[in-house]
Image (cartoon, rainbow, N blue to C red; front, side):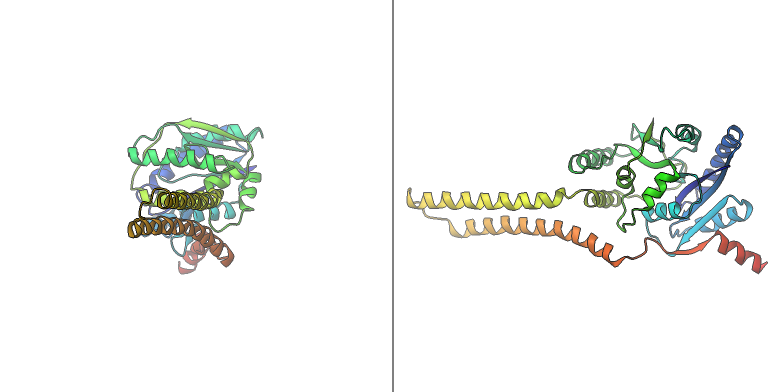
Length: 323
């Protein structure tokens, strides 16, 4: 028998959870009919939801033994949710997917067929369109992927998603990376292994609203840049060299104009321009250093990536005791 663990990070997903559960049940039954040796577990990660997500997960775990859940003590973010799922799942094969049905469960049988024979260690989806997204958001996303692949040795495929069907070996490789500042798109690529990409058109949410704002995605993209590239540090050094070169040329020009042509030096405007130029460059470079230093500072603290408040075992035991 082979166990397939399906990890589903959740944050305020009360509107879509019943729809997801209904769809995933159909797919699991289909896979069970085709591959009788497969068994399943559904591991939901409640990332400090403020709606009725946890109550729904509690009810589901009471009525379905396949359903497990972990509820965080607060909101730690999707990266922590995915890590918690990978760390606590028991499957020989592991799937990570969202609850909003933008990651269609219907792809799971196809993904399993790619991975089961050992030819691939991972099957994942890649969006070939961004239907439903604003043009500005799509343009920034494409720019981010192009920039990352130019400044980083880790290739990140444009449109590749967190929806992944992985072997236990690949999951163990991901879990060996204990870093606090996590950028899973980069981690999935960094660990390597053979990956099969399935292209599909973008699917909009089945219900509810996304928790990702434009600025949230922008901050997340910065996490990826600082986690998988030292190019910003090189940029700071290049800007320093460039500013020194410009200052040297300006000094030569001023000396020549004064000694050869006898032109007076415009003191105040020149000084202010130089001060603003060099001051701005220094602050920019210090800011880059500060970003890397802050990441190092958080890593050195060795804080846990998440804290669990409750899981299905705690809830079932408490419910049994109360009844």
